[in-house]
Image (cartoon, rainbow, N blue to C red; front, side, top):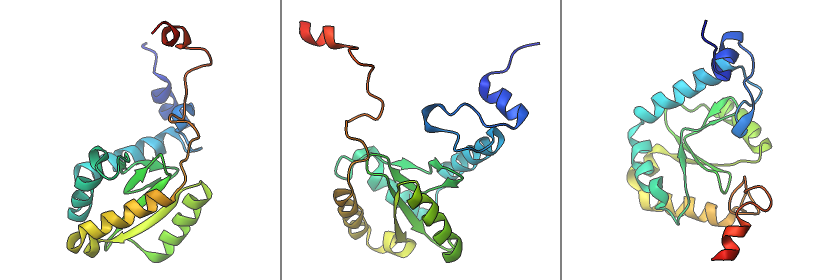
Length: 165
């Protein structure tokens, strides 16, 4: 019998996987896999406003800030995330409900994220204004990490090579 990798084993047992790389959120491996599947489908089939906004946010085009599309944060899938600034951009259309959005925003705020909501109409009619508003929010938000990378090299690693140069 072949052995299962840790994620497959966790899925089989419906237990939380190892928490490495900030993943897990206390959710079962099955639920994490389900959310990842939903996020993948959302990336393959974006709405027109999401497609237009991603064209402006991708490849660090907006002030050099990197964005992720439909990342999983806790039990939620958000539209766009700038990890450096912990800024979430939600494009609101017909599928968003004020009551559940408020509870979701409260949970995400408690995790340290700031959320800005942009209406589909604004993306479709005034994409430059939307980008200016997002850029303003990015500039006002503090950096999430004190160093450029959240996982710096272990102490002393690479020092010898740098001194020889």
